Length: 331
Ligand SMILES: NC(=O)c1ccc[n+]([C@@H]2O[C@H](COP(=O)([O-])OP(=O)(O)OC[C@H]3O[C@@H](n4cnc5c(N)ncnc54)[C@H](OP(=O)(O)O)[C@@H]3O)[C@@H](O)[C@H]2O)c1
Image (tube, rainbow, N blue to C red):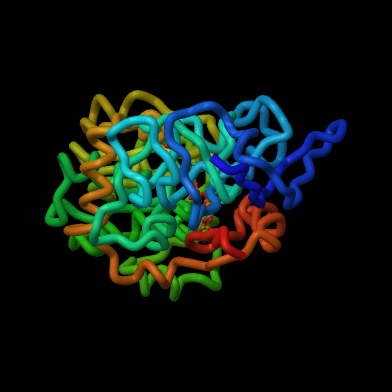
C-alpha cells in the first residue's frame, strides 16, 4: 500500500506540561491491528480531555493521539468481518487511551472494536452520540429494565454535559418526566428544549446532608457526576427505585449509609461503557438508530475543526461544555 500521510492532534509531554498540536503522521506509525479506518468525525469526551492533559490513569505514554470515538470508512481489513469502504463506528475499549485515537485522520484498531454504522444513522449523528451518548443509552437501558414512566420522575445530574444532555433527551423521548440538575443557570432553556420538565439548580442539590435518607421524590436517577449529588439522589429515591452511576466530575467519593438500600430497596447500577460487551453495544446502537432516534440531536451539537480542539479541551475540563462537541477531521 502506498504510504499514507495524515493530520493528527498529538499530545507531547514536556516536563510536567502536556501540549497538544496538529502534526503530520504516517499510517506506518499506527499500531499493527487488522482494521485501518479513515476517520471522518470524532467527538470530544471528558476522558479525551483527561488524556490530552496528561492524566496517566487514562494515558500512560506520550506522544499520544487522543480521541475515544471515531466514525469513518474502512480502508483495509484483514478479516472478513468488514469490507473496504464500509462505514464503521469505533468507540471505547482502548481507543484514544493508549491506542492512537480519533483525533487523527486514520486509526488502526482490532476489528473487534468496530461495529457497522447502522443504516438509519449518519456518520455525524453517530459522533454526536459517541461514547457520551452510548453511556447515556446504556444508563437508560439498565434503568428502564425496572422503571417505567408511570413510576415517577427521573433525575439526571450534569444535565447540560454530554452524557447528561443525551440522557435527558432519550428519557424524554421514552415518555419519562425528567428533572435535570444543572450548574448552568443560563442553559435552563436548552434543557427544556431537550425535554426536561423541571430544572434543579445544582447549588440547591449539592449540599452534604447528614440525614441517611431524604424525602423520596424520584423513581430513579442517572448520575454523571458522583459525590454529594449522587449521595442526595440515592437518598431521595423512592422505594424500589434505580439509580445509575457513570462519572466522577464532582467527586469519586460517596458518603452514605446502607439505609436507602435496606429500608427502601433502592438499587444502584454502575455503568462501564468501555468494557460493555459488543452484543449489548450493538443492541444499544440499533436502538439509537431506530426506536430511540432523537430528533433534537443537532440541537446538542457544536461542530469544531482541528484548530478549535485545544480551547474546547480546556472548556470541558472546566465543566463549561454544553451538549456534544463533534470534530470534523476534514478541516
Ligand atoms: N462510566 C462510563 O462508561 C463513562 C462513559 C462516558 C463518560 N463517563 C464519565 O461521565 C462523566 C460525564 O462525562 P461527559 O462526557 O458528559 O462530561 P461533560 O460533557 O464535561 O459533562 C459533565 C457535566 O457535569 C456538570 N459538572 C461539571 N463540573 C461539576 C462539578 N464540579 N460538580 C457537579 N457537576 C459538575 C456540568 O453540567 P451542568 O453544568 O449542567 O451541571 C458538566 O457539563 C465524566 O466523569 C466521564 O468521565 C463515564
